[in-house]
Image 1 (cartoon, rainbow, N blue to C red):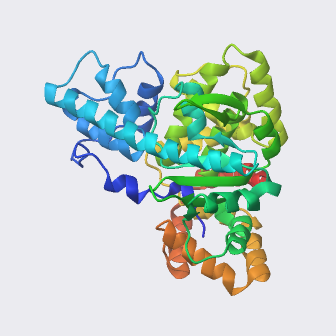
Image 2 (cartoon, rainbow, N blue to C red; image 1 turned 90 degrees about the vertical axis):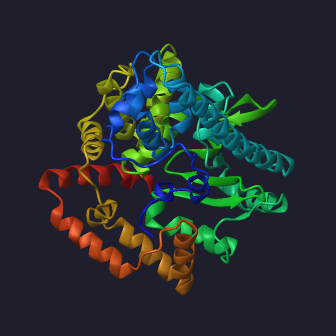
Amino acid sequence: MFASRECVSHPDLLCQSPALIVSGSLSRIPPTAILKWLADPRTSAPAHPTEWRSLLAQCHGFRLLPQAALRLLAEPEAGSAAMESELKRLRMASFSRSASVLRGGLRALNALSAAGVPAAGFKGIAAIGWLQQGRAEREMADIDLLVAPEHADAALSALRSAGFSYKVQGVPTSGLRSFSRSSPGSAGNEAISLCDESGAEIDLHWKVGRVDVAQAISEASPISLFKDQVPIVRPAQALLFSSLHALRNDFLPAVVLRDLLDAAGWFTLLADDPHEQGVALSLAETVGLESALGAMACILVDLGVSSADWVEPSSAARALADLFSEQCQGQGLNRDLLYLCSLRPAAQILRGLITTGPGYLATMRATETAYGQEISLRGRLKHLLGAALRTPLGQWSRLRVLAAAKAPLN
């Protein structure tokens, strides 16, 4: 009901956790140290070879395992022969999983093309297409696809005819679409998740904040993936989608470290392209993502892993970057507190209840079950009250900035 779906762990990936990933008593490595290492080839691993298992365990939690395994294989201070063999196995296993998900995305795009529905890939598939030259060296839990709002029903019909089924079971298309519009956790995103028989998951989006989806699709470029030419959003749009995803997920390190690593790649790609930089800045202003884009630049520049001097961060951007830093230092954030900073979420829920009545609550329960978020309203309110009493005044000011930054998304 409250949290965005992206914060939910994917059980299928957790069940496939490599044997190497084990919990231990070793000290926790700061998320910023991991980000700096993965984003800057000159930076050595933030752990001694004896602690690589702990490092990999954290990277697995951040969904950065393939990048970490690849970097450790290139470390000058190599681990044991057994560790090297295990790292190669991890990399190949992750590559195989991501490749399987990508193939599912290609099947979905082919089905949409056959049905005459224009579409484009963004987020993870864009990073693989533009930043990794088609190599699946990035963990992929799903494929995110864009279609124009007027094509949403045709797209859903085409995917279901091609063997994809809704992840949230027992709810009609109209109910899922209505809930997607009125759920406060959607933060301006309207999408439905589908899966095929192989387990590949597709997130079909027709509204993403205030982004002009039709424009993003029309400006997409064909990128080679598995010998197919796949429509992928342009780099300026891709950078904004990474920023938007980080904002939607409240700059929570466990979720957005991968977005920041992608953003470091996008900033590098745009470093010598003033035209694309201008497009990114113009789009950010148009869709209300200046603070989110500025925060991404602040975080990466502060770490010394990106040159983003063409982005001039505002005070709101700095506040969002500080919120990320605080969470990296262990200052937990109850994301439901945002709903005390704005009346919009309550209005969305009320609109959903008025529009669809009991069906809204039934869809909410079905969605929470599908994404492993089952918790009673009473329990949620109890946690919310406790968090409100423990939250320091300084963090409340940043929460208000965060709420203000997210408000335009709806």
